Image (cartoon, rainbow, N blue to C red; front, side, top):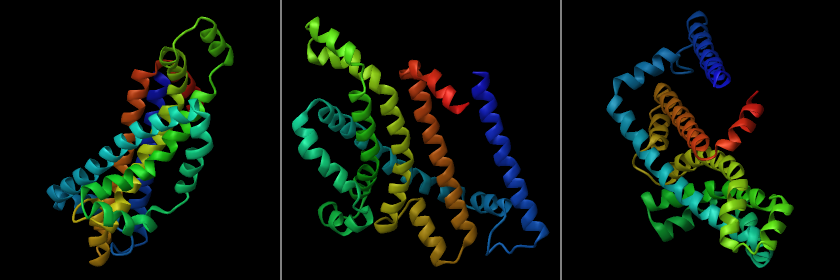
Length: 257
């Protein structure tokens, strides 16, 4: 616990120092706000229209969470089937790998035809971006189970579903959560990309507005809020992981150290 607290404190202090250096450089070198706004100018921009930025953040958060949940559920199911089915692994799994290499922006016109402009389109884009790491990590976790445990389960004639719940899923859970953490960060990116293509609100739409108006402070404000949103959602997944998979916490601490 102390190690986690010191790591968080170190990260917060590092961020604070960088912001202070950024502010100092803006003052010393007289950098115009329309080139690179100082942190204080960005905070003033947010404080000037808090309702506007709160609304844009909530719109992006909505599509991010819905798409992430859909990607996680579908990814875990698809990964489980892939891990336990040779037929699926030989037929559909290569298609999943192939589709992952297709740029989602290139598919946007096709997706708009099917889902139109709006929340459905944004959720599909987010889910398609976040789906892959969940599938890969689910397959990795389930296929790396100790073979001796599987053989013992078969000798004891344990039903396959019970074997999955008692052996496969607990072993794969840390790997699945690793995929979910990657998927969460990708979900925010997918939400912004979808808002670039089709949206009348959201932080991605705010970036488009800022660029069209040459409002650099607004652009940096949207980027700051996106960064904070990603950080908060990633931290939320970490908290859920520590609660749901406590046996992976020691390994996570070792990696952090």
